[in-house]
Length: 72
Length: 477
Image (cartoon, rainbow over all chains, first blue to last red; front, side, top):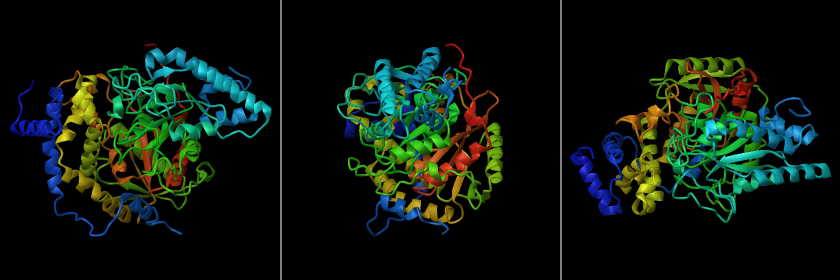
């Protein structure tokens, strides 16, 4: 097995606790490390978008977006 | 050779269907031509998981008998088709490209399979695919890697690897694929065929192996955009058995293909989709824009909004949903997954529910903001389907490759995945070849439910180019 980072150790422990799954191979541990970038990317979006107050659905958004910019 | 004097397996789906309708060729002759190609090249390409020749001949003979009787026949009458091996057909194997479902035989059929049958087509093979549709390269540890018919050392793209390779190899006139992050468009691009991912909810997913509930789509791969249009007219539309399918009217997509792009505004992204694009891909893409302009389209350079958010949230949704669906097998049978599959799913189990809810809850608002900014200015978007020249199978073999191989493999879908999160229709059509002789794809996307506009542009392009008519000279295995 490759040397694990503290981040990978923490994530591995979390997955074992919540899901009962252990790392299947070295590649899985490497890809677990990629989550650090995902977290950075996710956090970079903080404050750029907000939750809508009213009920909505993606299906409704699809229907609404279908007519945006359509020239009659 | 047949009465109409050519290799009928080289006909487009539409031409083959019309030839059957006119009595110029029999359904049996079509099947024989496809099987001749299959027998000659399957050892090299490895596009199938199972083939039912006996059932196919029975279906072809029945189609010829029905036509001879003179009754009404459907728009796909007598056509032999083969599909990604994850479309359930009652009583037939559906391995989903896996070892875990190697012997799985469902007792019901997918709605799309039933609709194709009602239109006169029949399925004769289950096609190779990435294990549980979970890679963009076409590697498969259990059923063997599918190989690109243009050069057997190169990837086919995935996850609908066999669908792309089988259509290009003239084993079938068309194939269903599925697309969660590019799995129809990537093999379409890599194999030099046409393939469309419809709008999310446009086509029923009943009886189709799920990967990511939010982003899975059913769609065809075929030689031409017109072929895709004919199939879309058959399979699209609401299905009571799939309550997530849209209750929107379905146009006759084929009837709208007129080659005229005057008044159509095509957005050309200045950001994201052309970042770090390989020079041959850029050259082919720019040449394709000139073709669209030659048909009357107006090209509009655009800076796309929210692409960082789209890419990040798409990654969260697909990782969590893929891991969730397979979590029980990850606990019980971890060693029955290939290394590159369970390693990809494993991190998804660590992503918190709050991230997932946030990614999903912002999907609608992001779509509306994206549509307002983009489709307020243009009708379509054009991009390369894959940013890089196709890599080899060896270079993207995560199971046996050095650290970092997984990044190259995952990067294949960077231009296709955003359209799954946004739910937009997108087609890939062939637009050239790279210096290694491998196909390059042009991706065209549009507003939700604007498959007609996407298909019209793709068809117009194919009226002035011949990339889609080229056929690989498949070497021996």
